[in-house]
Image 1: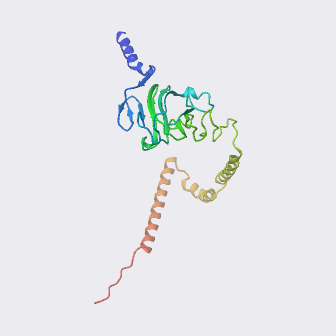
Image 2: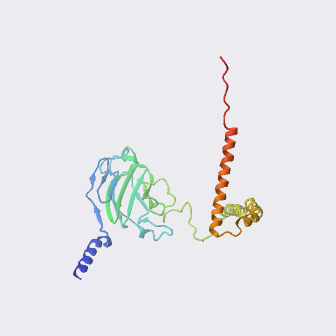
Image 3: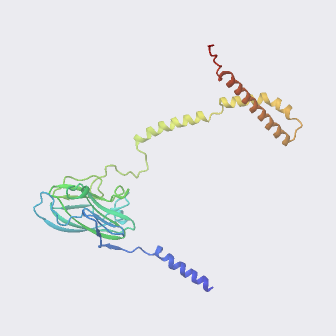
Length: 290
């Protein structure tokens, strides 16, 4: 009994971390790999960090701002058909603003807050990128260029942006609105929950279905040439087989069938060999006398 209790307690001790709630991590001790790339070994990463280098066209930092952005499944509940979202879908700042983003991932999976289209001479690959495996928090800083422009902010994990995790960030007056930003702009492809199939899809499907049905009907027709040949062979051979196997036991019938098949195969091989010998061999060429 004591051994059983000890084994049970040991099993619970080993398995308890798997059932424990994942600890929230503040990723504030990152290793600097150069070129604005910082990361740690716990799933936190910053790319494109820029704390003090002014973009071309900025004489000075015009403003210093900080924002906290949350990411998670629960923020998509207000957007039907979406799975993930940021808690903020639209941002606006003055040109040459120094912005620090505190990115909080409330899910137990990996999320990103990423911008593209920044000047490549200052931001490697034109990108500013925050990434954290949740639940956790990570922070990064960048300085915006002076141009009025609208940037896409999104999570680049597969299907996260398509499922709703995106927004737009305007510098100055921006360069217009981006499509399909949840709660901000209309979707390019509207969701349809009516359960009906669009009319333009019904006709091609109907034609394909009819063609497939016709093909299946032809393939599954009651008669075919193979069936006709089989019936004729059965009618012609039945009397012969009845006389051949009359009075035999089941074992003798099987032995006789095997012997007949062997003889048939041997005869076929003999015929093929004869044809090869007759038409495939080359006649000897007589050499002229010296």
